[in-house]
Structures are given as C-alpha cells and as structure tokens.
Image (cartoon, rainbow, N blue to C red; front, top):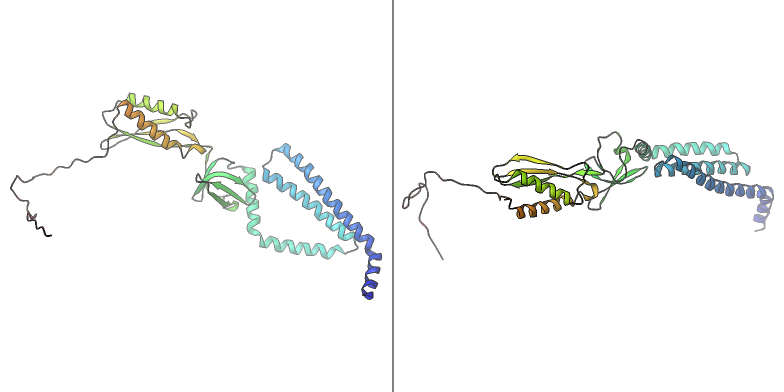
Length: 284
C-alpha cells in the first residue's frame, strides 16, 4: 500500500496540473462544439436545405471541434500525438473498408437530397416496389403503402436506376358498360355530374372520359379522373357506386353478360340423337 502511494503521489505532483488542464480543455471543447453547432444550424436555415443534410453538416462541425479538442487535450498532457494520429489514420482506413456499403448509401442519400428526383408525399415506383415517400434519410428512403406498411430501400439502390415518379396526383380508371341503345348525350351528362359531385376528383387537370371499346353486347366507357395520392384507394369505389346509382335512376341499362346458343339440325320429337342413349336406369 505504501509503495502504491509512493508511486501515485509523485505522479500526481508531476502531471496533476496537466491532467486537470486537459480535462478543462476537453470540457471547454464540448461546450464550444455545442455552441458552434447551434450557430451553424441557424446559419444553414437560411439556405433551406433538407433536414438530413442540415443535421449532417451540424454533426460534422461538432465532431471536427471535438476531435481537435481531444488532440489538444492529449498534447497538453505531455503525450506524443504522432503515434496517436497515425493510429487514427489506420483505424479510419479500416472503418472505411468495413463500412463501404454505409458510405455508398450516405453518398447516394446526399445525391438524392441535392438533386431531388422525388420529395416527401410523392408517389414513386422503383425496383418493382411502389409507395408514397414517407422519409428521405442519409442511408435509406422509406416508402409507405396504402395498407400502412413501410418499404425501406437503401439509397444506393435508388441512384442510377429507372424511377417512375407519379408526383402528388394519380389518374384512376373506371370502366362503365352500357347497352347499345343508350343515349350517349345523356350518358355524358350523367358522367360529368357524377365527377363534379365527388369531392376527391380534382378539377385541374380536368377528368377525361369517352368510349373505350365496342364490346360484344355493351359499349364500354372509360372514365379517367385525377385524384390526390391519399384518395387513390377510395375514389374508384365511390365513382362506381355513384355511376351505378345514376344509371339506374336515369333508366340506362347496364346489361349483364349473356350468350345465345343455337343448335342446328335438332331432332324432331320422338327421334333419337345418334350416339346418345335414351335409356335411363334408376337404382335405389
């Protein structure tokens, strides 16, 4: 015990003030890093950057100040920082090799944020997945389906790929089949009224409709209005119901599928059909 005290006391006498000074420098460095981070964040707010980019720059500024403070602290304690700096370089290379995927995702995330191929709330389709852009991060982008499920796509899978951006609107298609004896002028008037009465249908761009094809027993009318992305799952069912009710009230026939079968050379009563047995055996 006495030997330990004999070693500690001289050490504290020799290096105590250096250790205390280093801890003070480290504490001041943390305080300065926080203050600089807040000021830097306020300055970046003027440029209206995306939130992930703003947070990245603020964190990099804080890490830079804390790193410089740590080097100054170690140097003030009388430690040779040359091996320390070399060790940081080796560790940095190892971390970079191990985190290639993460770094590529971050680079791709910055590219997405700056080039803005899509924004929050837009409906996109890529890599056979689709959904509303829910979050754009530095590592991944999250899409939300209409069933509230989330699809997470690494950013490196997005850049350089073919992307279909629907924006904040989508065009739906509703098919209405009517009989050939229908009054087309009356039909167009009904469709216009139904579209105008539906609150989900956008006025601009204007909906389009017309004859899609002439079927075997029906005239098929296509109705293609525009709706906001959140209304996309609900608008078709509402329009089908409204069109059906309007057609029924106006007396417009909506024919059901039917087939007409004709039998040629049908035998007269009492004459048998060749190859068909008329004998019936009933057993109980």
